[in-house]
Image (cartoon, rainbow, N blue to C red):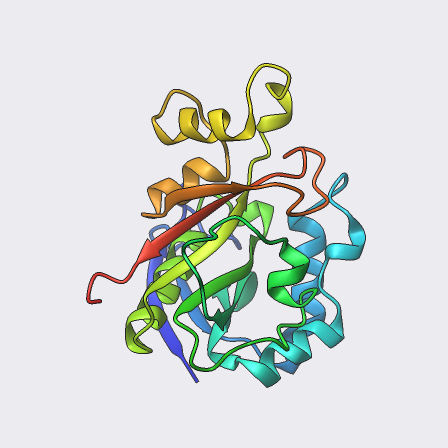
Length: 231
């Protein structure tokens, strides 16, 4: 099982329980297990409130399938013993000639990842979420780094995933999804998800239409990758 412990600093210099730790908290990244499932489902409900479709939140069967098919790609992060977020991935054989021709349901087997390919050349991100109260703690970046290490350790070519574009609905009448992504990538616009992924070192490779039932993104997603520097 993967386990990494570290000390992190809260954004306001305090700990979640008000304790005097000079603003430091203990963070642990590890693979999630069955005893975590109920809390992971609660975290998803907090992280993706309506209008995000409730049926797309994790259920016990999906989480069990993650642990069964690819436990290395199922990670969570704790802060002082409290589960604060999770990230899930699968391996697949990716054809870069068709970078946008898929939906979330197709590529993730409706979130069950039974299509995981142990020898796949690409680590595909299925999901990433962090509890709202921990959003400024840098936890998502820490989990992303753990996935980059997994790409390197298992000799894959890339990490790939499709990010929501929740700011797109505000300008959809003026810009195409690709134009919106281009403007976010150049810094002309800010998007809470895409701008974060850019800061994590992910680069856009295309736009996927009808990727997910996501009104804020007008059902689009930005396909973004991180290339293994050792390949």
